[in-house]
Image (cartoon, rainbow, N blue to C red; front, side):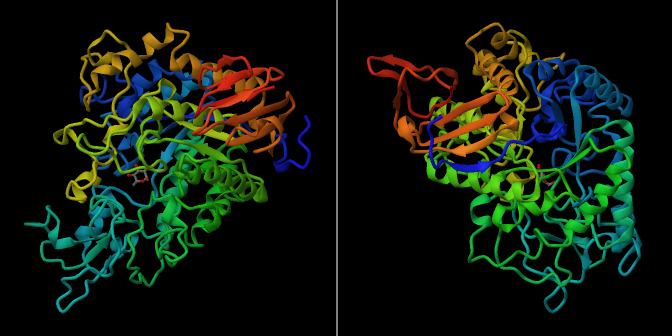
Length: 579
Ligand code: GLC
């Protein structure tokens, strides 16, 4: 193709390692499907997932990532684990987990599970022992207990704030379970970067390290393909626990790299890497196919690539991409910088647009300010322009899935599911809603149970028709059975895209930046993906439509193109794959 002086961003990869090019589908177990075996009607369960796993295989994904299903008081949707080696009765049994693994294997899907090492639940035996054993005990060393400041220790040890709002410390004697307990008068404080029910572990403690090695082995022996590591950048804290004065929203990609904010004493400390090097060795005891995926809200400049050096993890979510505004200059920079940073360490870029912590892309992208978006949307707040959001989300997915590397999709993205922005406050469960004194909606709106059958109660989510969060009525049209029967549905479009991505081997391709070149100048972004299949142009329009000449063959498009006398018109906010 005549693109002289095009900028080479990335060379093709030749590797048999599955995770370098995989599409991985995130399941939020509470909300995928319920077989009615769990202890609460309307909450999804593991047998529900097993029954409906063919949906993901037929979609064309290579693997699933399951958010936590371990024993948990569910104060933070299961990210508060009280027993890492068993399944919560809410979701079924350990035998159900094994059955899920077996079914996944039959379908050719790998299974990644979630590991939550930064904190346990306050109901975990270790924390209960720590409370009971009292000040100065060995049991307390596994967590971060400190005396207070102020004249009588009535102030917290430092000024750190919880990600979910309010201070990151709770005084032992202020706990609801204190009256009448052994710790009734205990004035010490414990650290929790999240909810007070999620005490942070002390990763300087050898027992903490050993325990997690053992948990890794427990799940690896059952056959999981790896772990998504929760808050991977948070395990190690500056041991002096200094004041910091800033409230860094962990999920604030933008401000995360702001140069006027000094390095935080609790995020992304060098010491975390030693932990993952040890974990790598544990994984290698099994086979080389097992992987670690970092949830590290760190931008490339601050060292995201360090997490995926050859002797550490395998993938690290590209949150800069997720947080980027829908605007060509910014996107172009993120794409080139992330490929360059990952190439330096020989790791794939791991694209992502949505997960269970952010407003769904198919809504977020229709707000007046695109990018990471707010922490949930309430009925009286700015409502997304839905058609615009969906159109942009389609363009963004068609861009993401044509770029080299692996990609994660969040359940419902294949359906074009929007955020639920009308949830009544009375049903909200996210601790962020409560800890911010209801100033933030929180994440419930992206966690609503999936619609499977248009004409069934609860859209077929559960046998009783119950759903733990209400579904919007208009989801009837988005139900999976209805979309499957419609060749023009979002689901049919998405399936086709994943098939084509595989056939064209785009994930293994090299990438040239040809933005502004030749007759593609009307696009905001233009790339050439060079794979063993050949060269495919991937180009995206933003605010302005453009016309392409008839020499181009359109392989795929995120929107209908319009035939004009001068050629084919590609409307605004559209991605095309051309040959
Ligand atoms: C991660 C999870 C999020 C959870 C938090 C605390 O960010 O994705 O859902 O609330 O960690 O575990």
